[in-house]
Length: 406
Image 1 (cartoon, rainbow, N blue to C red):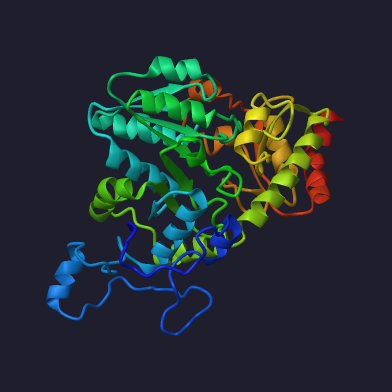
Image 2 (cartoon, rainbow, N blue to C red):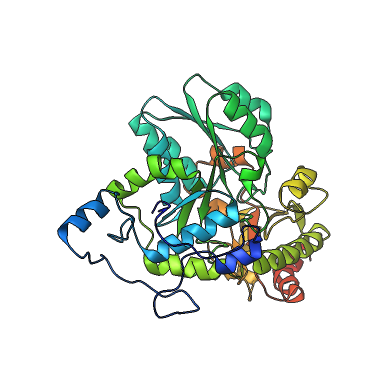
């Protein structure tokens, strides 16, 4: 739901820092004085009389009315995430893809044009090019890192630039400030998918982004339990552009899932930084393995955007890496199948390390041409690094890699 000014606020110091906000921001406790947020599992809310109900449904009086667009648990999650991202508004959604759907429906119309990195999550490309293309929204996909391509793609009807940084799975990093300036000079907005870093490492609005998109399914939850999404943006944009679409279309975040995300954010900073350190240690080890052709992780000096990543990501490379094994699909499958600790799944941001073959799973619906353009080969493996012991993870990966190099 939108930020309701009339709802009570938690009494926090104005200069409270990120780790404090991650634990304390939300709503004040109920009359029962609970220290941990209560669950409000209700579809609707009771009003004292018909006139009050009418005012509340017309947004003339701030109150919770119907959980499709108005629930205390969702408000707690939204306030907490907005505080961490440094925005004045936030709206929760049922998933990360639901957040992108809400953003495009709220901001664009037939005849509008969006420029997007061709390295973004595969479902994002399908949504923009396939689904919204049917309704007259034009999309152009460009190199994540080539500013000249972004600029050349600008048109008079360009309304939105959309980037994911770092990208999944290539970990390509875009210059957020440069793209923000480019978008604003053209009268457009810049939206940034911050799933791979989370606000623990990166706050895109500090570099000029207008909208920050999240899949709360990833690091915000942190334990692989639920699906959730969110858009962080100025309060006016949330109120005027996103809330009306949410009320009509209903890509709503459930109260329980919002509660899970709120609890996950309490340990976000500790988890993400610890996982990032483990990922860098594994990336360095993988670079030296004879069965590995190339490693992709922004924390490595060999990464093409290493210096930019260190500036934008608070000196951390993130907890997701990818690597190409020598060979092709069969060799990549052999490494994946040899693991005993890593989970073979299609997610990241979990405290449990997850190993994935992107070309056949997360990006499997793209054409081979699209995958090749994004650099996602059949020999690529993605690893979402969790909180296991690094030495155990090395042994787990070495089981398959050593067999390839034998």
